[in-house]
Image 1 (cartoon, rainbow, N blue to C red):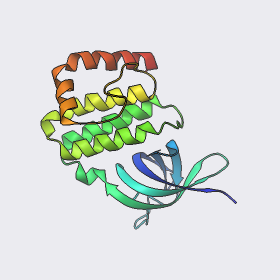
Image 2: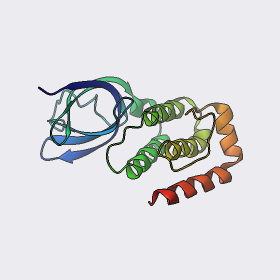
Image 3: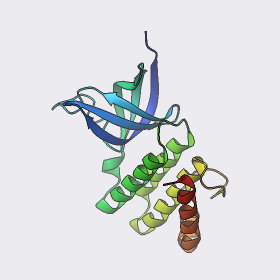
Length: 189
């Protein structure tokens, strides 16, 4: 009998797998980055469709198979796509997710990544749009630091998106961009 893993997860991306199945990339606090198969997700009226939409935060039940993870159930907790209003902020969220997926080749168990992305989504949903560029810089720095590509600390090692820190990033943006470029170069991308 396979063991069930119950965890919270944020859907970072989805890609089709066969006629009706979908390959879902999840970021979880317990298991880290997980790629799992969701059966029948692309069929009309699929029960798990809302809980496994891109940028959805859900309670998820995972089963570990011989080769892959499989999603056995999911309940939607927060739909970040609907909370993050406007095309610009959604593009920033998608770019941050895309960078994270490019930096992580396989599955990685780094619990800090979940709190980083959740904090970023909360900040995009609540802070004014004129600071979203600084938020994007900040989330990239946090991701690079969590993966070991940036040795400097942003603030006390914690992933926070306070207005004071965002103002600091806006003030010294070019310095932070240099750090990001150095980190991405170190990653080999």
